[in-house]
Figure 1: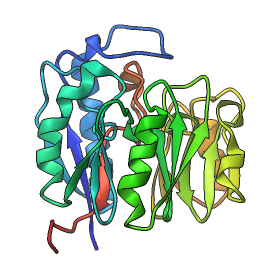
Figure 2: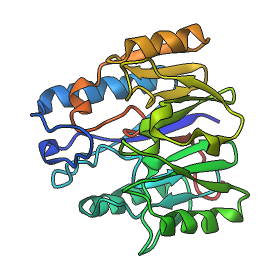
Figure 3: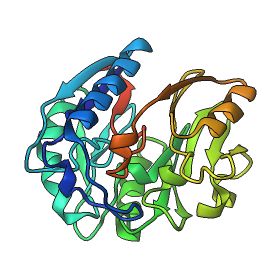
Figure 4: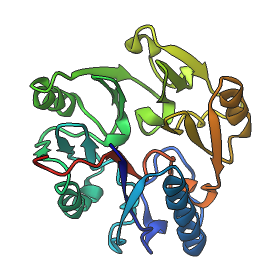
Length: 260
């Protein structure tokens, strides 16, 4: 089945975004919009149909559509984000996702954000982070048990989300910064380590044998190329000032409408 990506345009108020591990710098909104346009073009170049939602002017972080939803083959889980100021993003995103999947919702006191979820087959690894708590992880496990998914908590540190520390590349392989997470939770997967001096380089977006990598991480890109992946570098430097990664700006899934 073809892939679809839901994205959202950059908010004009992005300079008011939430930050946890990045020092605040002025964001050139026009440049951020141009880089986001290139990101969407990159997805289209890989054959992905992009559904681009309009910006939410009052929601500075709304471009990061991965956090409010976890979209799987059978269902979409609308999360209750750990950043309370972001919870207003979920309603309109849920309307878009509902075209393709039935929705389930994480409820108080649970919190979870999609950026904390790394999927490998039928297993979902979820970071124990400031944004995703044990109640949210337990709810996710209950919601997905009927579909045969296993949910496993992962200890992590020094970064915002689990995907800041580790992403799945396919081929039973993860790209990771060992210093930021407990890799033992992942069992016997093969680990490719980010380059020294590029600690934040683990957040890459794998589509088949192609990996989208921020241009600011050239050494990690070379490591991936030597390991046999095709690398597409992309400049997201302005978006990175808002603590962006290349995974968090899209929800990518098979384009199967609800009921099909």
